[in-house]
Image 1 (tube, rainbow, N blue to C red):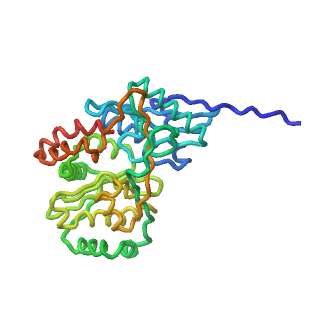
Image 2 (image 1 turned 90 degrees about the horizontal axis):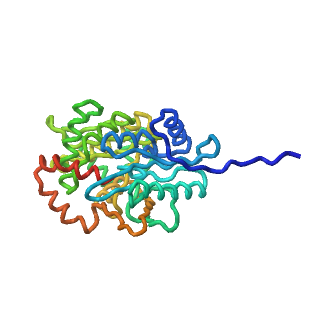
Image 3 (image 1 turned 45 degrees about the vertical axis):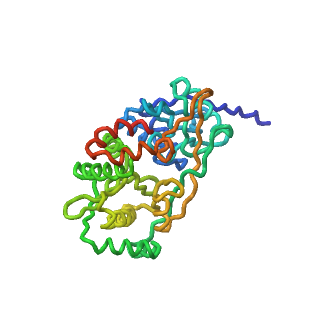
Length: 352
């Protein structure tokens, strides 16, 4: 008769991200379990390097095997308070692991870690969470669809009305470049900073973009007119998908249909790089960006977020669509661009 096999209990501990071997183990786990780019320690490291928000995380292990991983950024802001985010500056994250028990153990450990780090809030951008946490499934949507087999098929896959806009953009005297050079970075930041200022949003620190470009598979696609960059996007590549992550256009981009050209060219470029899917990122449900992505033939799917607030603490509110921030957004739109670029990163690095 065979002797009973002892099953090791699951243990949860804080990851040792300063140790290269530990980082490699976690990177392998993320890849093997189909995690997002935002689950990667490399993303956490880029956020830390670009914003100063410490990279950390919680590991669930059974014996020598990883069974769960919760990537975390310790976000601090004099305006919005402290936050333990999974993951910082990400649209995805949360628990990556095997089984409900592992997920709950990681979430409970996150509550304890948050209190030790004086963070009254934990935010998970995806993944399971305890039922008593605050859950939201209707605030944002994601948009993903397969890329077509060739350039003509990609154009034909766009619904008729939006396809007409893309055709017009192809006839314009627009120049498209893709790269990771200093000139690409300068042009992208100039365009992106103007774009978000016009929306009333503080621009992220350029150091964050630099760190992401240096540490992750990413590049910049820029559309120019007469030598002037008018639309630009920094895209992430992970798991066979391209995600246009930080993009925007100048005020003249709309009349030039530069954004339409930008996204179409990115689809072609990504397929040539070997990508199979186009991840259009997330948008606030019902927003202008949400409707724009639908015109390209993308169907929205709801994203599930969860948050925990320490007993006796006030829930964190850094949502730019919140009523509490509308007057600030209106004011920011009127700021001269040099002023917005000077002070924007000081505010935006605390958004997390």
